Length: 91
Image 1: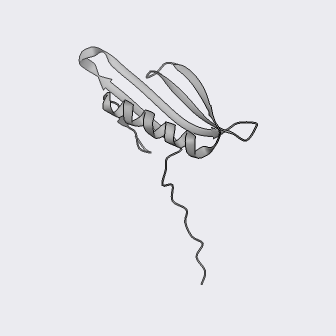
Image 2: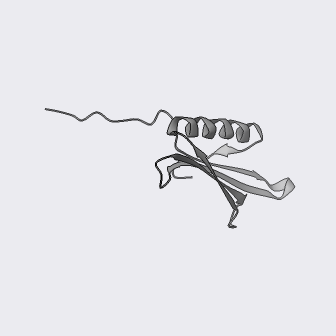
């Protein structure tokens, strides 16, 4: 019996975070995702804004997926220090 190996994501390619502080009327979201562009390079797509509204978006181009994932992890760490919490599937 042959079982195909399961590839686990060691490094995230999608991160969703939020920061909610009712005392300051703050309800923010921050999304990061690594995607391929039309030219085969990796892009880090950043989206942020108030929960329930459209928000803003910025795309950073990186030469390879590894550098884009490194940038994603650094930004996620900065946001976590600022009070954002990572959302898990089902939240």
